[in-house]
Image (cartoon, rainbow, N blue to C red):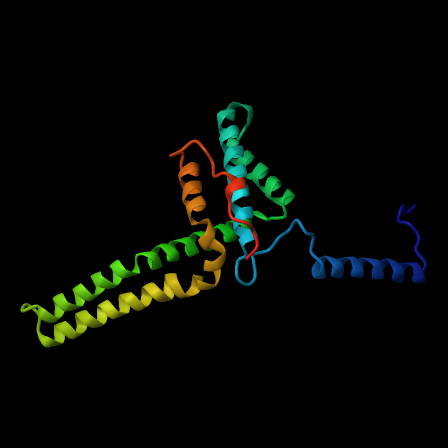
Length: 202
């Protein structure tokens, strides 16, 4: 005798309708804990959240490593607990890692811009050195100058232009991010003080 519950044709249609609506709701209104990569420019709140959660995940990792004997596979356990912590805060691990990458790229670009006077001076000196060189033919000079120009263009295309939209959000937290890098690298014992970070309002 079948244990399958009996459904009338109307009941079957209703059940299918509920399943379809449920599926559509998941697609159109994803669960808030399953955050995707940030669309559009980063906001200050993204950077503040990143700093706070990076401190928390680092402290979690260090605590678990100190008690590694309690786990069959401490590395896997760290990843599992990290994912759970991030999910609780509204982030998927991949989305959080993508956020970290964007922040780090923007920070690097800001450093490049900060020393742009020194960079431009060095670039100009390199060009002058090529132009004045007695060891290059005119053709070789043209090729060398073109190579310098290509490298400058690549620098801007790879590091500067793609990150510009995130600069306003990252710039106020440059010192805190540098502090965070040192903290996570175990070069200092104190994490950034979250209470002293600039406000999230842009």
